[in-house]
Length: 580
Image (cartoon, rainbow, N blue to C red):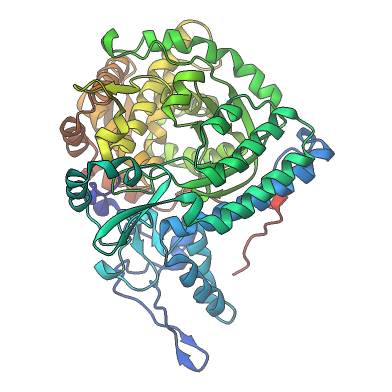
């Protein structure tokens, strides 16, 4: 999904180094080779790895120990054990070369601080490619030779979109398996074959399943025990439906999700699900405060700015909202920019049957807001509006972003009567469109909730100013990344509509009167793209609005001294900050 924004390179974070750091040329060809005791090192490194690490400062993340009963701590230990196997699987999903490369870096790091820092960045990025620089390699090989394939480790490295589409035209019976969420595609002579995850990643999945079963045996909570047992079985069968239903029914102090979910890492088609894990504890008091919002999802669906014929009025209305504190994350949940919240499961069958669950990672969100988001907003927002910057507005908008993932078009009826998800029709464009939709509908639906008195701790002006002020936080992730590209669409659309206006010296002001109309018009465009699965319309929107502009590039240069995100250190899982 992220490969079409090559203009993002024009605003790469390497334009200037953080304040106080030595500026280093970002050209990946300008590399250094470091000695490995008696012989020249086998791996060349980009020279600016320390500066890249400065963008992602190590940040201790802990949780309120009073939220977790003593008897549950043994369960958590087993869940962390399972999650470490998920991390190993995800490393291979990014690239099959990752385990061998990491092993070399570990060996070299024993005697070399330079390689120790390279290993740190490798572990943060889950590979030798920098996701904040359009997956530019920072460990050799560089250039085209060392580029990360669009299909990551899910497909043969040389497989193109055209080649797979041509194969499916000739072999339509292979579509379900080759395009399935839970298969890897490999060559068998001159044929393409699909291998189930349960077979391809058998060793780690069997170990993770064993750890989940041990955790289930220790669990005192029945719903947690049921979910863990069903998820362990799913690891070995590739059938996640029943365990997703069980996760929707989970009501435990421990909130855990573990398995293959998001498709962002598959930039070739957005077909393949990446493994991730979140081990968290529920903040019940904070969760109860938000519980009633899920009851209004049917009204929010009816209020969407699109024709009724495209609304998903029969979708399941269960929408548990959990505010949690993170204990440990792994896999895709711990890759590059850290997740602040999620809305799962993604299986449209489960959503239609039961809805979806929204989980907000409060301790991670607080760290990201105060260390990254607020400092950026203070450099971007007009000084007269900075009083409207609000953590409550930031937190609640993220909640409504996740609520909004579960609203809007679901399955699209085809001329032959079959039903297909818009994800399949929009291919690699889907993730950017969907993330943008969730952001925009998050504002739209939050205004709906404020009008009905469901949210009253801040005003629309707080919402608009905070949202605008935080946009460059996401665009710094890179416009080839789904969230960053989706935010660029919003920024350029709102600028065109006059809802955000420059006031000089690189600052901007929100026109509170024009913003609701701008939000409505963009929401309608995104919803109709998903309702029709119109690939060409999606491509036109992204090409026209999801792009770098001179003012975006200039602003990103101005905020270069502020961290891009955090690198979490989960002390409750025994982690410590590296000392290099």
